[in-house]
Image 1 (spheres, rainbow, N blue to C red):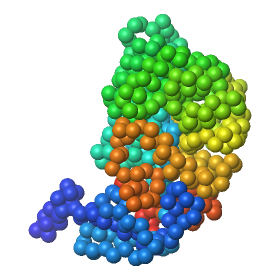
Image 2: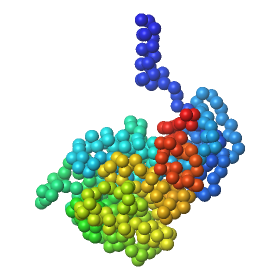
Image 3: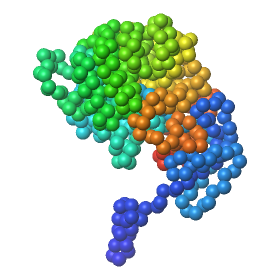
Image 4: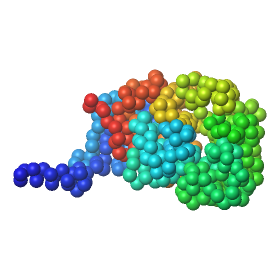
Length: 446
């Protein structure tokens, strides 16, 4: 009886953290092939991490005081790369069917999104840019350590005009009563705003709540029901209202846009990033190059990774038109040396979300494996830095392995610079996953 009491007491102390083992303050990863995110040439060496920052990288051995607060990992000659970055996600919507996403209460969506964010991290994505859907609460919870997930650059609600790509209301919701907000609006998932003054207010609301950048809908979309793909949304004056508010907060506006007119209207108003753009023409891409615009382009193709809209439906017809422009868009981006980011924009399907790495590997249709990995690490980080002081992660650098960078790392069983298909199966090929100096997966000894 006495022994049972002692054991129960020890279990209680362990479970409450009062008897928990201290996290190591230093981690040394020895014997790895290091891809720093920027250079095609790798080096064989060792990496020292202190707390959450990489403090030393050397081809020589790194001495470390093994005082019980240090951990040494033998990397076994494996490939070490920066954690991956997805520049276009919707954490609250990626893994739930569209009807459920529109009808579920906000608390349930956050619980499901918390699980989805953990899966993203375990796929090697240590940072994401969430472009609408109400992820601000989830982002804060991750940073507080309440749930597991990647770093989140959150836009808060995506801002849309009535009948725009962000209007997912029911057909009988119009005429709309002035001042009446829908449930998704009240919870910061979407923001319907018409007119420059309303756009200005809704933009300021997102910034007030902690948005790192602002997302507006500039044109028709595939998954929305009221807007044909060719429709241009928002006027230059409305865009300028959002841009002015964002600039006052030291950050930027990105827009959902496919067509030349939607893209050009947004750029003329001061928008600095275009998401999608599959239907851009050469003249518009030239303008993007002249203005130094970022292009966050997704490898949307009519394949097994596409959202499965019913054949013959309006959404399916729009999807086919959009995906038919993807190849031309990438070739134009390359021709004019556009600042290019990569993202997935997965929506409403957990099985498609699980193919995040496959969507990255697909980029070798247009780029070398080095260019692909650089885009999903270092290049995407440069886009994130447009958030300026609204960037919640100011202590270290993102998307690279360098002294002073965050310890966001993935150890791969094989060299994805030679075989990019390794990123398709993170469960098998990613042996160690670390974010912010904390190890979330380690199968090196299995």
